[in-house]
Structures are given as structure tokens and as C-alpha cells.
Image (cartoon, rainbow, N blue to C red; front, side, top):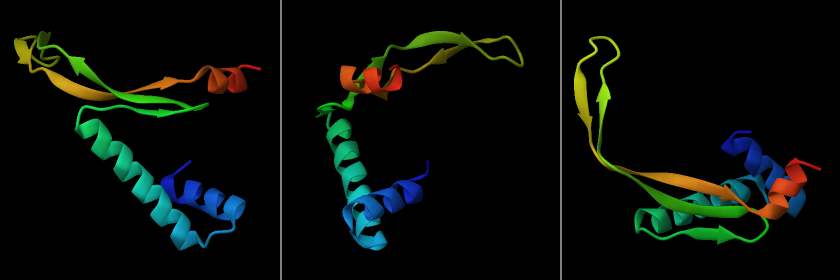
Length: 91
């Protein structure tokens, strides 16, 4: 499902105009992104939790040359599904 398809579903289920639903989705995504960028986490009851995961610096290999390369430390977004969502996916 794409962002536009999600907005269409939201518009159908809530009675909002499609443009309003798209704007609401964009705003929600922006709010989650801002919170994660600040190092926080976002917990949505019954759905799951978005958080930031720290990846340590490590050594890897260049697949084409086989040379050892240094991979810098980084942050990544992580999602943990809530038990209610897991139950819905695995009835």
C-alpha cells in the first residue's frame, strides 16, 4: 500500500476529503520523523512502537574487491509490533 492508497482508505473510512486525508497522513509521518530525529520514540497502543536503534562502527568487505572497509556508526529507525497487531496477523 502506498501513501496515496493509505490516504484514500482514511478518506473513505472517516468521510474526510482526499486532500485532507493526505495532509493528515503527511503531518503524522512528519511528527513521527521529528520525534525519532530528536532521539525519542513513538508508541501507538495496539499497533507498535517506533524507536531509534544505534548501529556500532564495524569493518566490512567491499564485495567487488574483497578489500576491508570501515563502516561508520549510524542510527536506524526500528519498529516493534504490539501484541495486538501480532495476534491480528497470526489468528
